[in-house]
Length: 384
Image (cartoon, rainbow, N blue to C red):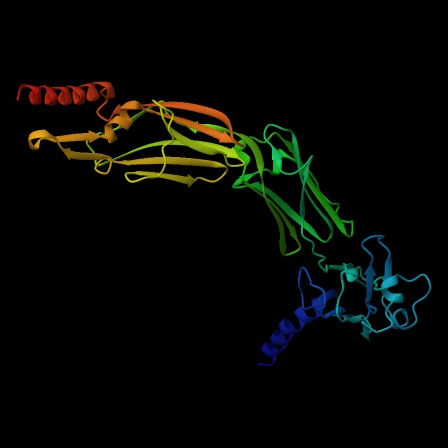
């Protein structure tokens, strides 16, 4: 029994004796990025000390210059003339010496961004130093710069530039035009990690077309754990034009309603006018005619004209109780239409539209048949 007890104690004591001295550097709370105004405690400790170890030492390392300063009570209470400003400007005791190798920073500021080291230079055994960065974020929103001017001109070379100044720390960026990623299309100037504060810029030279109108630029810069972005909706000036306005449009004349349409674009928005082809008389909203304009965004529009067959066809009493049909509906379709695009009372483009029956027959055949019926009806009245 005695022998077993000795073995057990030996097994228990060996791990304790074999544990090597190590350094520990702790931030409380322990965060990768800090926001201004919080309280942070910094502690440098030596774990598992032995007879051959000395006291550890906490160091402050200035990121800009790389200068190392050992933390002591005298540094905070009576800083020397050559001390860093962060220690000389500590009159309100914002940085507090709690005890040896233990700091408390109240209301942390961006200027507190630095690196801390925990070392034991006098220890007989070489002990690996511990290092942690105290990163206090400085946030700023990026901005878009557009040259040579605003709004953009179609087919004119334009420089798009996103910049952000005086922030820290830079992590990454993304540039979009709507859903299209532009990162690799432009040139980015990425800040050096040792620079405080930091600057970022990205720019590209483009020749915008009318499709760029009303599209959205988005510049995203990740600063620490915060996403900052700038959004710009582009305005592109471009002359009026037809996007689609078929010269032959099919209509089923047997339906109660029929429609014709034209798509067009322009910025500023142009005026689209429908005219009768025979006398160039404007077609306007009236009983039996509906004109609807749909904004399809990005400076494009669609104009749809709907004709109501019943409303545009009147039947009146003729001689000897006969019915005479005044079919303005079919006359409109038979004559065809002219479509004009105007801006500032100036005609920019014109289309002539001929109506073709929906069953792929020429509209002229349908109307010739309609005219023959009218002719036969008049002949029967003469014989009577």
